[in-house]
Image (cartoon, rainbow, N blue to C red):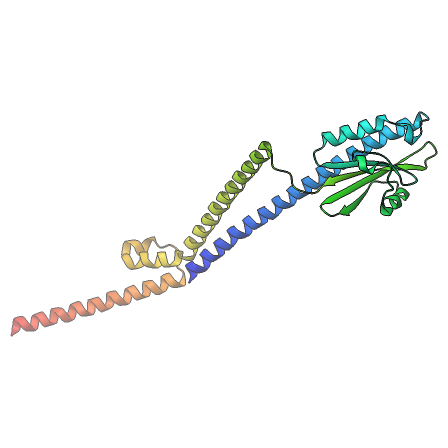
Length: 252
């Protein structure tokens, strides 16, 4: 029972360590993914807003910036997850878009409501994610906004991503091996300590020389030594009885 209990504790320890490592690794990977996604969103919106406000600062009106169409098309081509980029004015009309059908169309009401915000915003959508940022004129008033539609579908992994996954799997296998070795060593030490009194008791039963080596006189060793002394006394009594029987046989 003791052996089974220690083995169960060791196995539970290994599983707990592996579960903890998996949870920590998953949380770290998720945090890193969110961090890079936030940086990508910020970079894209900041760059598009900067281009738009720089042209507004030259005195051009928003509908007088044909170069802005080339900018948003180039940005869409640079980021595979970008499905569309729309630029609409303060009145809610799309002036520039990577989707030709959207140009000149009114934007949804919830897009126009975001013009009141000075910071970047995110809107959830079905299988998509919308991020946006308003841009301002020289008076600090909202002149319009930029909306980027991003795909939330997981792209096919690249060769570098497969390589990273294999390396991560190897690291997990290495950690599992180390955890198993540590658990095995701990179980071995625990078993050795648990059965140390029985080992000393066995050495006591093996003979006087082995009994002299048992330095720790715990309760089990003392009981074993007492039992050995009783066995030796019984053996002496039996030896005397046998001698007496042999003497009677010789006399007869």
